Length: 83
Image (cartoon, rainbow, N blue to C red; front, side, top):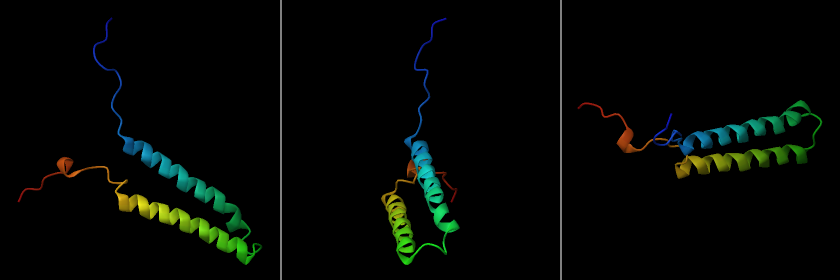
């Protein structure tokens, strides 16, 4: 049996981006769990270190939204509403 044509289906890079973002924010939760468990035992330095960690991740997320990395469609593929 001879196969004709390409056998792989095209994948959008947006699926990989969503997967990587999921892993980044999942790792954020895992890394902050020890802080949440020992919140009363960490000093002010530990608290502000965690806040800096949150700040860097928040700035990265705002940059991703601002640059349009999370927009998966363009105007050509949007549904046209009857007017």
